[in-house]
Length: 287
Image: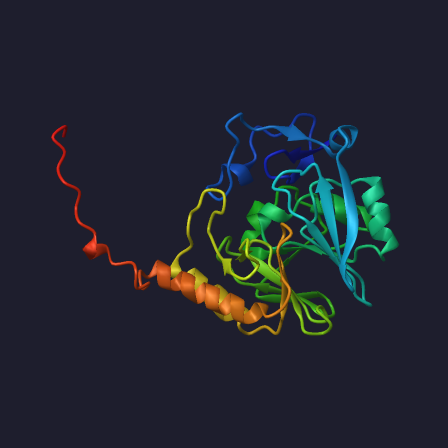
């Protein structure tokens, strides 16, 4: 029986003769079901249609996996290589023999993780391809796992799947949303892989945070404070997002400043926001 992949979000689902009636990830307010309705595919169908996954170096010790055409949300995965084994971060929805071979040539996969349920892709299939490597899922988000499997390892707070790489739970987008701190990245200055816990802006100089990115639902102020304060405890200089964004240097103060600005907007503390100065609209004769 096939492993079904939601075409909207790219999450794999259990092997069944027929696809599930709905993807509960997509019916949640943080994601969406396309206007045309729910649709499903498989890795085999994607490969037959010409979908490929390419692996390319980003910096010493870090490779990016890009799927084209995009599958689901379309995140780019990262492979962090360490002397104690490699970590696959936010795996794509596609798994193919060619992609597995390319990753194996880089040392394989010793652990799999992602920032939150939306960006876990074909995590279980990738785990199975590499000897059932553990798949780290935040305990607070365990109910969102679409393909239950013994390889899933629950965690909370902080967890180091391999020496030198640490998952840090921040909450916000999902209760278990996290970032990955890679201690030795950026020539030893530290790299943060953000997922959607924070989102790097198009200028690569600002960040923000949301409860729902596609549906533009903002987070509560307290959630942003927690994210900012937890990230402020980490040592990092460079930052990568899941869609090609990168803050090459100076990332830590950018995060602190951007999230402080977001808190001010959520509190209506920004000087040019003065709701009492907006005149009420004149009554319409048609009303």
